[in-house]
Length: 367
Image (cartoon, rainbow, N blue to C red; front, side, top):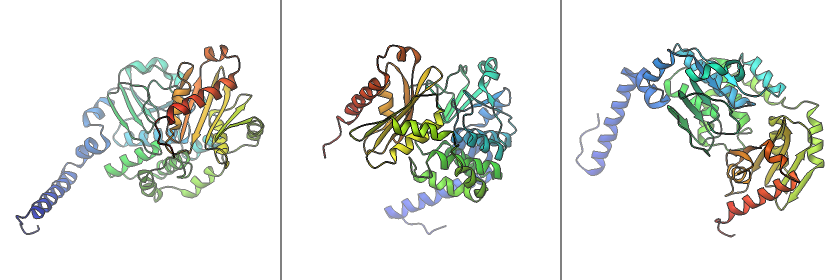
């Protein structure tokens, strides 16, 4: 113990030292309860409650790699504490690359429709999603928990939530293992690594220092060769028809790039094409959209400083649909009833986004 000092700096140093000693003591003696309460945030009371009910872990509809990785990582973490759970998703698994991920890392999930009658009396944990969003449609009852990394656009009530504005939900799940000092198996580590890389576009989109730290944490445990292989095989030959249509239908308005794909297109492919459009020199904000069943799905990307893709899509679709997301990437949907009332869907979308942009930038200082 450092010698006692009665100067101001000495007293502060002494307090810091004593706090560190206290924390080390708590971590050593009460590690299980202390870590779960202060780091993972599910208390022991929550865990005991989970053991009395069925537990469902929900991804958003039409899940992506980050959603499935987060759900799987949480499922295995709960299993460590003796709690079994079922991963559920809405919509369909659209991409062969996602199926490859699920097979490679031994991840299983059920369509939400298989368990609809069970949700009201179960524990429902949302990952990579929030209630009242267009990409999560189901009735969960009141026993709801949420782990997510998206901005909140609609208020919702949870028993407990951990919503952080970071690059990937997978990063949050990795942090739970780190803080609880639990070693993850190779499949879990590989899935979380892949989910993190995909949602940050290989650390080029919405990435934070926290995401980098969590990637370093998971890297030593994962099969990075397998992660890289899946990461490099995202496209299918049939996708090029959608690319061709998107390229042929590009409309530019200033530094906006709009593109309509005039046939059914998976949400994940729309997002890939939106990233592609943003990679052009002239485009700073890309909006790519396509019919999916009886609605219009939109993917928005933004690299303009001071402008949020999430705010743009939320404001642009107000009254005709729903949307939101991160400053650099977002998505939305225009409802069937709204589409039926539009004379020209493409003109309406362009007008709404340009109006939303004016609103978003009206308070920014002129350069």
